[in-house]
Image (cartoon, rainbow, N blue to C red; front, side, top):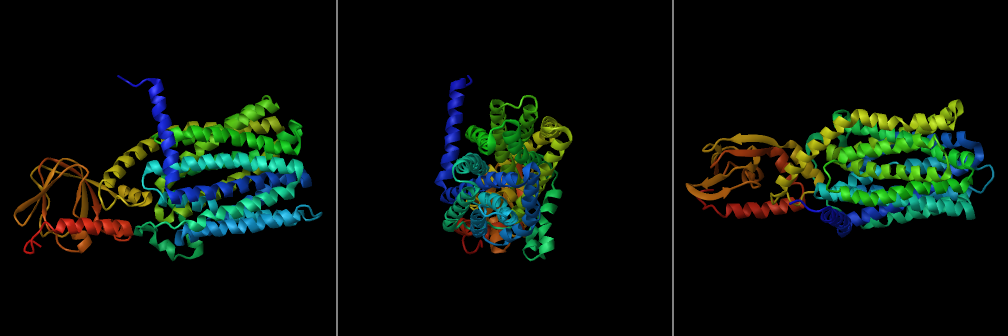
Length: 561
């Protein structure tokens, strides 16, 4: 008998609560998430403040131009700066970024009330934007190294999405309050304080560096110009990553256009004044907060790529609908729906990309994503005022808003296929987690091992390998049983989820036992080079391997060895 809807709802709610708890109990994840909350509160408050400042000094065109001036240097800076995060400790890179942003926005706060200082303020906004660029990609690359399972990573990204949404709401609300009571300079000052505070949790973050496979080792010593392209090359090699990047780029185009639409609609169409810009932005944040809480129910979902697609579509569709009846009430509702789309994009995009991209260049892949986002925001910020000037506000809203629903509809079958592939990978990760020496590995490392597994079949009665053979692979049993014999004696019977072959690989010696299939065997094989490079270079796994191998060797007499 199937469970009742009430029982199923209870299970989902308990799973959602467990997602938050799993992130909070992991001290390193908790610190990383708190830092993100402070940094993004600063980002949204400053974005609202600089938009209003630019509108005062040049209207809608100035808003678009300033957005471009902030985004285009950022597009170049992302691939230029993120290689340093893949070469150095990512938490230290983040702390440095927070400090630079605090200085730049604090200086803008001092200059904002000064007449004739607009260009200096814009220059500081560019510095703050460039400094902000590495934060999200480096943070996105850091999170997986603090997680052990896909579930924990999805939970961390949902919680970060919730904090992102809350930061949107809080940052916009702070901006609205200070704009109505103290002015733009106070908004910039609040952003500077939040940036500085966001560095503090990072100073207490000391994760064990994740082991690296050798496929991208050359990037650590590559010339800067070469390293800048590493993330882009990794994306180009993977069709699924490319698809995620294209849809993410279209979503950020909408975001860039929205920077202009929020100001124009609030001030010129709705007549709600400068504070109305903060109110509309807060509506977007409110929708995102509500959706982020609901997104906790998706942590165990096997459809994250498709939910990402839905989120991208929801960034555009409400903008198109706003063209038909631009009232204040409708604008608030539709922008809240955009916020829902933002929450869905966050959980899908950052979880799926982190699992698809090679860990060695993960920060650079996220840097390439940030570059695409910056270009999308810049292009959208330029496109919106051009369309407004040529065809009016309503036509601009309609044309730009319909772009993402159409793109997602065309890509839907690919997103469905991507979800199926990730579900298959989850089973392989669960298989590897049963192996004691793999259990301590952070998610990026075990994910990479899962990608490298090769299926093998062995008929009943045949040997997988014999005592004295050269060791070249490690094996994990998917289905069936195998007998282990050494020195003419039976040593063990192995079943599904158990691994063998580690002694020869870790001790660089011939096989110490014979493993023969008792029944037909389905195995997953991992090359010796990849096995040893991960297990030996990660201290907790190395310690577990030493204990386990010593236990196995204790079964032999000196003559057997």
